[in-house]
Image (cartoon, rainbow, N blue to C red; front, side, top):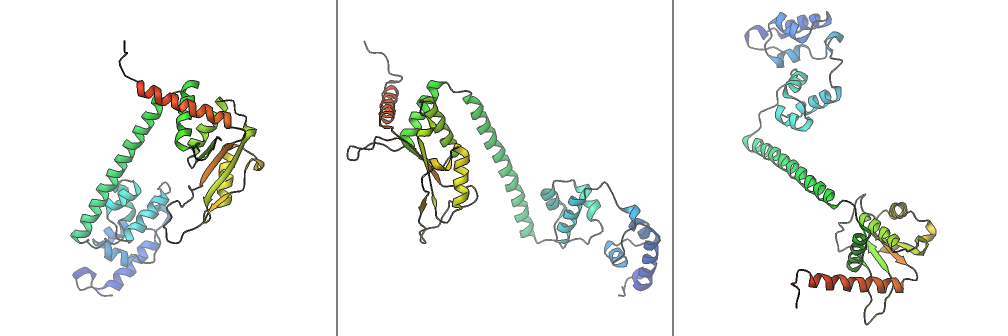
Length: 290
């Protein structure tokens, strides 16, 4: 290819000299200075297909980052965007990709979108950091639970999530259903506090038929530490094609139902304790009457 501007007119002759110097072991910088080539695009063309000599390779470079930076640069990414993606310095990026052609300038609208995305990603990171800080501080405030605190907590959990007796449907039996592993763990620990033997417990997994049923069964069995004999047959929820499922993904394991056998008396104790909590809350803060 012939170039119409001055010293690059006889391109083939210039390339022949550049290739000869490259094969003699000169670096890009040495060839550039020797041939007085101050245009990176032309230098790239002159050395196209010629590997760099071993002595110019950097054995301590972060090879994976360098390769990724070069890939992104070839896709037209700016230094700022590569830095945001890889978390390395601009000076390193410049060193790794300086032999590559510069990307075409993006139109102002696209640059504005990229800038907005960068600001939003930073904002999301700040928000997430604050979210985690608040959660960690709240967890630290709880500390250890006394038996009384665990008892009251368990009564509240059961009355919110457990099966309850109705005047029109006598159900004096303890059955607790939840999809949160933490809730299940607290409930089991609460039953331990009440002296309920684990051999009185029976479990049942309830899950959507299109989920990974076997994985869910293993998940709950491992969590509660029970044998297969303690599990009833899994209940499958039929798929409704008119609805869009949101309970999908690896984290979805359905719900676990925990039933306590011979639990009528235990249920009555729970119900009575709940009424006691309601009465105590109702009277909390009221001045003493004379």
